[in-house]
Image (tube, rainbow, N blue to C red):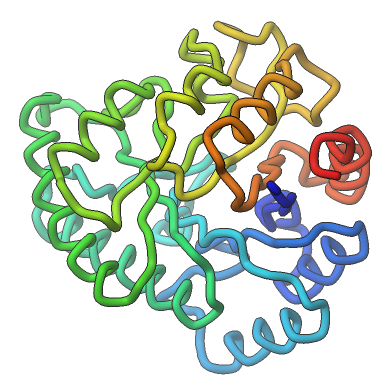
Length: 283
């Protein structure tokens, strides 16, 4: 049976322990940890922070569904209010790419500490001067090192595909998994990303059977080929009944995590309404 979790990336107006407590108060079974500012930007996430995290998890009894290492906004001193993927594991600069590989390993260490089954990471975009074919070679090299580390830690790595990134759809992420050839590599399947690309999200679930490390849920206005803006389930056009049916069909029994970072001013409302809308699918 799929269980529901909620990502702390909706609670960026709150410290991490309070975000966890609020998510627990809404009745979720799990929590996804944002491995970025303002919650767990790993170069500054010290022993005191880790103790506070552990205490919050112990007090609430929440399991950690995933460590979300997609963005590293904290890398920048003057980042604008948008998610930064860069530096990425496909970045052309060798030093910056090595930094991102190390960051992903640190996220794996955090996942191991809190008993999370997986971390997720996005590929980022092939920027000017770094054409896709070269970026993909960087990606393969990066993932070889990352998955070796993940295998030794017993933590899975889920690539989260997204339109306009180097890996942007179901077929591309499955091809990547085959090419890397590591049992630790899978897909963190964001239902909305599949829809925005134009895919049937339920069919994407079925294609990814056996490779799903985690699931991100959100609604999308317009459904397939809709605009990429995360909405509370019920406010868009995603068919969640078909998605949960597909998850059952493929035997997925992990967490489905609500990722509603678009509601920083109303995270409690987003958490409450999302759970109320989706409860019937996880009873």
